[in-house]
Figure 1 (tube, rainbow, N blue to C red):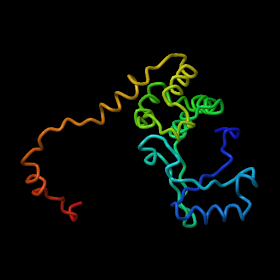
Figure 2 (cartoon, rainbow, N blue to C red; figure 1 turned 30 degrees about the vertical axis):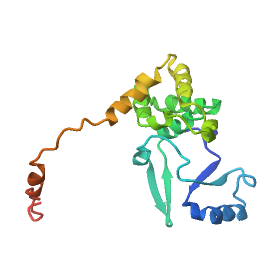
Figure 3 (spheres, rainbow, N blue to C red; figure 1 turned 45 degrees about the vertical axis):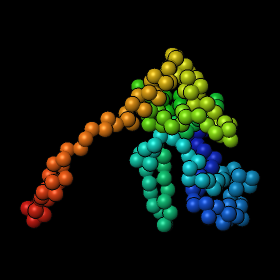
Figure 4 (cartoon, rainbow, N blue to C red; figure 1 turned 180 degrees about the horizontal axis):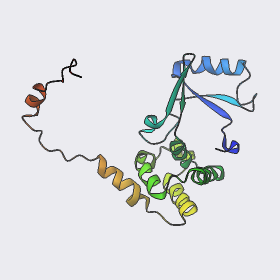
Amino acid sequence: MNPEFLSQDIDLYAPEENWDYLTNFVNEQGLGQEKSKFYIQVCDPRAFRSTVDWPTRAVEVERHGHLFRFVHPWDVLVSKLQRLEEKDLEAFKLVIAKTGHPTEEEFTRHLQKAVDLYRPKFDEESARGDMLLNTRELWRTLWQKDIDVRAAIIRPALERSRHDHVPADPALKTRLANLRLPDEKKL
């Protein structure tokens, strides 16, 4: 979209038992943060936090036995909202200027899929930022209005996750057992 917003690193996600080996390899190749302007960072797979369904929008490409995952821009924006520095606000503005999206309504709905990021953090996580405050600041900056995060994002998301447990249809098991698949020869 804009070379200024290209990350200077590639995140390499690997199982924990491989971290030391990969970190040593990256450093030996001179591709660590201290030795290269464009560097490789070995990360915990749980380090990227966004919507619960972000992998469904990511584009995956396999090359030479390696899986490359390109995360959807909206999901990257959600991950930036946890920190929301000036450069992150500029990234939001750039994406919207170039694509016209997300709109306020679209991003509200998208953040409902990230409702767990609004839960209180452990003391050790407090440096990541305050999602409630950051969301309010984002709304004032992008859409020049206030947002009630609890009413617009948190409550609707929690309501959708609640299921009214009704007794199952007692005949369902029998009906499913009697289903006939179409004859493959007729297809």
